[in-house]
Image (cartoon, rainbow, N blue to C red; front, top):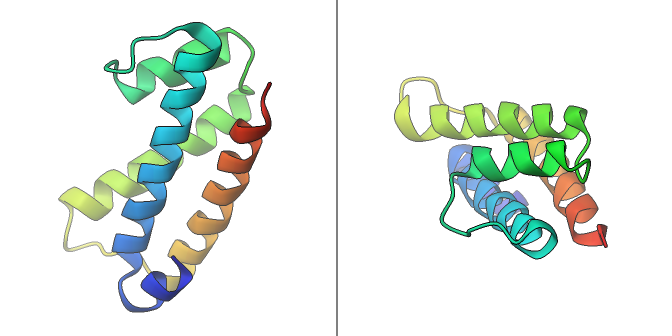
Length: 102
């Protein structure tokens, strides 16, 4: 995704968000038996309530989701390369954490 961020930062953020979203939903389904079709925010809230994800991580995920939404809906406020690189690193850390949760 780093190469994509170089040319199209907003697309890199969208792709990384898909990975984060899928990992979050998988974790919610696996740990809580959640319905895969629920909204991502519902999964996120349930994982925090069950103390599987820390509230600070949930806030970071919500912040990333906001940037993702801006990248999709507000074409006049593009994601910078620098911002994309930071988000990609943060997303990789969060996905890594969620993958390691037993």
